[in-house]
Image 1 (tube, one colour):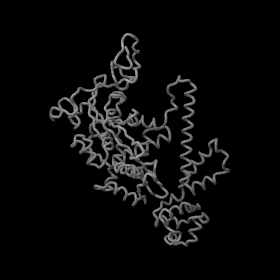
Image 2: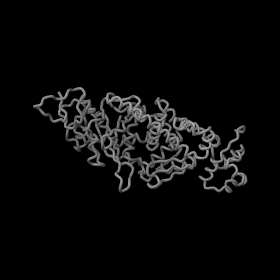
Image 3: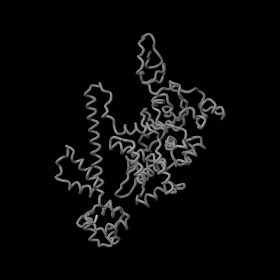
Image 4: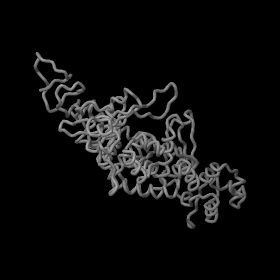
Length: 484
């Protein structure tokens, strides 16, 4: 650092503005004249070693940030301007350096826009190839998006990350949150990193849940979010800051193929770590057993949402102290399935999750009501399913609220350990004297219509690929798709 002149005027100016200081006040704190500080901010004087140390001491600034903050942005901007559309626009790298130094937020926006443009170009290329084949090809390996790769990997593996659980427990001991985790996290972010958490109105943040401006060191949350979701967003940001090494190690172990997939996986792991911090493993596991896995009891006890508590139940697979191996599925009212996870991986081959007779679809008829049902697969395997709608971020009067439905399931053999087992017919209901909804036998379902061979199913939406359609003109079956 002593051998290299460091010109960091724009960064010094941003630090001063973020702290609300005048040049005179900052110069006084650094022991220099206002005119000399003015020259530094205009990049007409370099930072000395003594001044860098003074900045680090007085304003808690990492010296490495003053030296190399823009390096990554410059490399990414070089990639942007190497695109055939922009190549030749700049005579050299100096303008890129100046752009990254003077306007880092604008630089980040340009890089984000370029990545979106490049991904869109790849999608259009895939679509062009698909159309050129006149429908003869049903899938292209290149058309799989990064989010598809991330979902497939997370769905196949157990929803348990031992390293992140340990990190969350260590973080909890540092925070010592008591009954106010939100306040403890805000205080920790402010104390350790100077990050201030602010909740902004819808008009200011119309499209974002969370936005972290690392240059002004402010974390913005949308007022659309419930208190539970605001807590999770702050916990995610804190966990991603504190658990950087652990998260990076887990991402590497997933063996993802693209940078975009790795960024998406980082978000998913941050979400996992936030849940582990909000609901520590040992206390949550013990409470779940005492409450017989009653999600409403757990959500009240830990101050979280129904979705967060149900999601946490799928993570209880620590060796020596496992919980009931739950799996979960989230769908929207159009039937799109976009979240699947399980304590032992989502049971795609045994359960499928694509049957229209699952209670998760019926849940939309009575929002907020819990549906409990036993379902039976064609091979005789039975599962206990609990379904309920979830409310998304709050909108204004003119906006239609986002509503999804969550299905929490497990093998029927665990029914006696779960409070919801009392709603089913059989020993659990008889022992408690409650019939609940359990007056009917298990609902016959299938993995998906295309793979199901149940005859006469009123809910069938597609014919099975394994059977020919019925050809008898004199007979019409109950199903919309008769087959032999």
